[in-house]
Picture 1 (tube, one colour):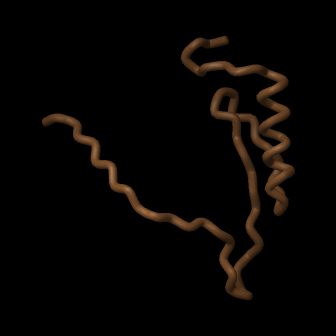
Picture 2 (spheres, one colour; picture 1 turned 30 degrees about the vertical axis):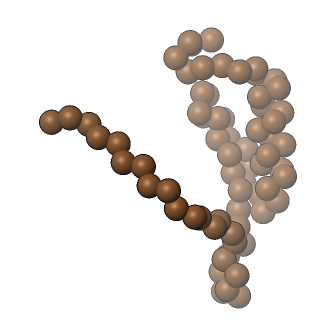
Length: 67
């Protein structure tokens, strides 16, 4: 049996749920190299800043390189 990739193009819209009973959106990011995670926060900028600061602090590392 051989592997087969199927790619389908579609228009997607991602946005917070607008229903009044919907919970607030929470953002949390995780490093795929060391599994450190940002704090969960309703403000995306907080999680994004964590990621940008982390990349600046540890540099660009590949899990395969072991560095």
